Length: 234
Ligand code: ATP
Image 1 (cartoon, rainbow, N blue to C red):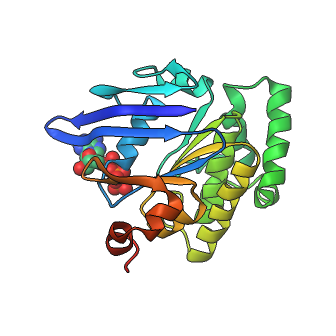
Image 2: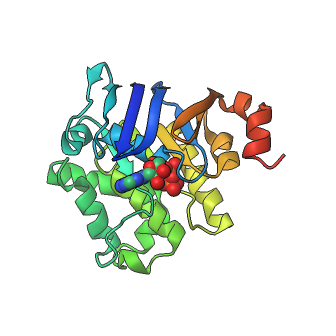
């Protein structure tokens, strides 16, 4: 569904991402893991059209989307949940969801989609009239995911969904991500929490200092000495 070839990203003198290749098949969860500053968010940003790449190619369902505006890429079926969630704290849960669908769906369809989201995330139904900023971190993460799903994307990009959540909430959110794949969604998951990511991913790629150091099935990575020693504390 998505391929990334030889992606390069620079911030002035900083070479943030070098020669990164990725391949994501439909209905898979692919994890992009690595430490702080490894280049994960930059890679996601370039795929979503938010950060310009200096070289490389991004292809979605056979179409070259390299350099395309983020808005156009979103219309092609890609949605990003950014690091830190970025919900609208002063707006209600209902309005946050409405805004997620506003640009992409006719009113009636958006309403129906909102119902689907509330079935998928029942906690949000309970807080429909509550301001987003008053939800817990985990609830806000669910709202951010539900808002992204309002546009009915085929590919969901998730940037550090575990960040800042209580351990119990992390499990809830990751179970939900695994469930989403069962609904036919394809997911590219960026995570610093490597153990967690490998639990739900089919394939994973490890980035360090902007470059790929290892790529394989989640099982292969979980069993590799490099991952065990550098990321799993073995
Ligand atoms: P994190 O989890 O901290 O976001 P990451 O793996 O997502 O880490 P990136 O945020 O992509 O890594 O950062 C990769 C490199 O690019 C880092 O060295 C970072 O300092 C640098 N960088 C990121 N954004 C910018 C920017 N806007 N200007 C300059 N340098 C940047």
